[in-house]
Image (tube, rainbow, N blue to C red; front, side, top):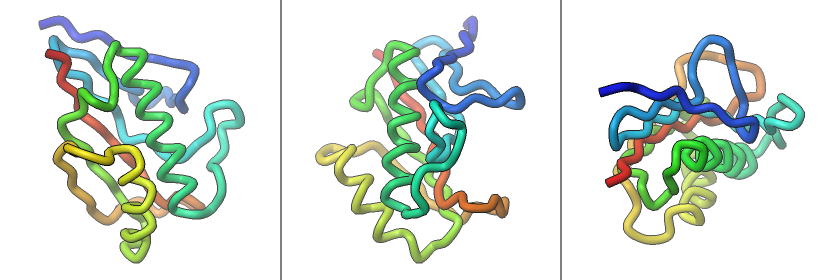
Length: 126
């Protein structure tokens, strides 16, 4: 099974990892933060704003791979501060209002200034 590297200008990039990889019917989106790709900077310092931008970035990567949020089967969330869980859920519920994918939430191990959340996804295009 050949893998295809997914790239888009509509999400943050790094030379250290691919934004996404498509392998067969699977699309794996790298951990993505609430960075505005047009400025390269984190958006507002609220969990809701950073969650919204991270999900926007994930959606752009999915689109570049020919997938949508409806194709997502798993979401992984890393929070800097576990007390942001309620705020994360407020925004997240807007993106997956019914029949949500599986999800895990864990504490982010790296201490990056201003970063509140990182989100990764796996989609299945079938």
